[in-house]
Amino acid sequence: IKDVQLTRSGLGKAQATSVIIRCTRLLFFDSSWRNTICCLPFRKEIQSYLMLKEWWATLEPQWKKAFNEAVLGLGPIENKPTRTEMELIHNSPALRFAGPEAPHPNMTFQLTNLSGLAGLKHIETLAVIFHPIQSLEGIGHLTQLTGLFVYHCQLSSLTGIEQLNQLELLY
Image (cartoon, rainbow, N blue to C red; front, side, top):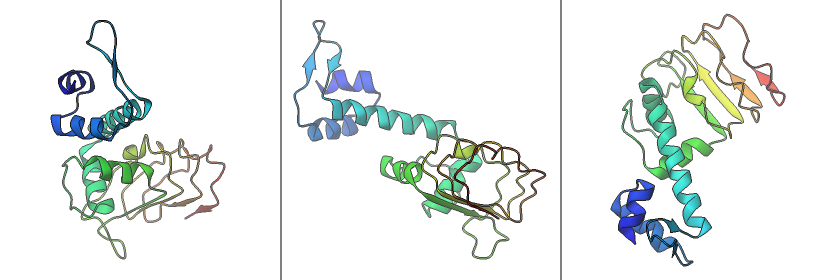
């Protein structure tokens, strides 16, 4: 059973075993015995994990470093975080990226764009300060955003935030 799951899900053996053990319902097989029809919690876990892996793989190196340093406190490294750490980033309601010149910086380098925020949906407060960012493009999908702090950046316009109807604070 585990080998079949491994080939279909792309998970490592230890991860697949862990997921199967946590699944409390039966696993069924189709008539070919190749495809598993599994309980809903198991399928959702695999889909969620694969989505997070894909999200991380598509990030620019600067954003991998930014999440590792500013959010996880691991330093400016590109290493892939654990699933739990990726879920923490993905579900965080507040993110702060303060460049090295900022008061109380949490980053040792500067971001050049906001592309790393694509795919994040739960952000309510976002601070990207003391970075040479010239555009707010890429954050229009953050519909839950109520506070946006982008001071000491190199913005030439506010284009990109027109659809943020919940936005109450803009600095």
